[in-house]
Image (tube, each protein chain N blue to C red):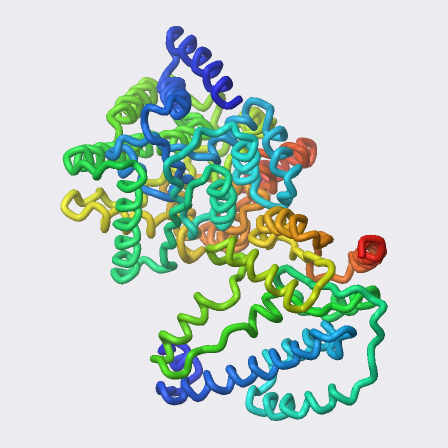
Length: 400
Length: 231
């Protein structure tokens, strides 16, 4: 089923690109083609959850990265989220769990996903993935590899995670039947460092007022581009994006009355939220996902450098890291307010809402925590959402 | 350990830790000994009583608690029979620290064993005393009865099945604490395994509030009634 969906989407994006397309269409097209390729059986498929593993390792090993959370987003954006969620629920998995995980699980247990040679999860950023991989591993006959990063980010913590990454590389080599080719690894690292530079350029451009980019597009862009990290293709796509932003082709639309910081997840099901924000001139000018928080990868000690990057991820370790980053973003991008889309089921996400709200209040930035679900639209209440968002914007207006 | 010493202004050395390990090992051994009184039919010790004791053990000064607990078995031996017409049940799940839930279940059946963070999983596996104490503590964390949060679903399922066999449970009540994802993810796997074993399971979901107790009671009663038909 997913394969057919990808095939249909591939035709749509090809058509869009023939008509001009743009960087985001090109990115979507690349990601869909990668998804299609994952069913061909020509290159090994490795499942890895979002930000669980530095993708350049997989790129250098010639593997196709596959992320079940993206599958949930794909089904939800096409209006079929409930189909895959229901597939998991019918098998006894609770509706309280994260729908990004549950949707992927439902799709996996329905046999929609490509068979992997390995699965690499990360126990620090998301609790659910450990159990989901355990279940999927049984179904697909693969023993999941689990990274267990420590809470801190000091030298000892970095060394501990570096050792784990070494172990992951060894296990992947075994699964793929090939050693990590050092030249290809260096090339992938070089590409990731260039991606970082390009992301910084994008972020600099996004600081302009009015914002040159659609905030929702930018969030999705970062989310999807991660699958292609380490490739040259992603560099071309980022360059195309920069050219669009410089030319003002990708404007957020309408007058910019409010500049907003977007925090946490994004709803992928049909929602009126973004239209509502646009109507009121509220532009999402920055988000925490697109932040460049890490230093360039040191090619002489790549795994250590990657371990450092993983431990600096805002969702990792103390909630104060996220709160401090949110405050820095709010100040750098001169936002009027912050919108935290509090995704149901994400313990890491909503566990820190109050701390982040208080931290932002200290730097004079009000935050609205908008409870919702990124994938499951069964409890979506657009009327309530409208009331809350409008009240928030009214309050921002009164402050101007 | 350094952080704790600084926070509480104490200076503990390895001998102090060894001594504390022995005290807590003793607490665990004494509490586990009570489980032996749950194996006969009818069991002499109920689930609510054990839960109260385990909760108390977590709060009370351990040395005094151990001394008090040491006198308990002789008192148990003199207890009148609790009647055997009720089915033998096991409670599985994450944290239950409210005996009311256990009492509610025991209105309909005998709770003969629990697979909970606050009972058998906390008690099972003693810390080795002839090793470096930190290493021994770390070993127990990793080797004791598996919590759902740890890797190793198969080990966990085996452990639950072992408890069922050892304590002769005829049905399992799976109590998932709301938003405790790990246990919710384990449930479909456990259900399948228990179906294969021919052990009926009731899935209950709850939080720390008493709001859903009425509904819970009805469901437990219906489950026990169904067990009566099956057994």
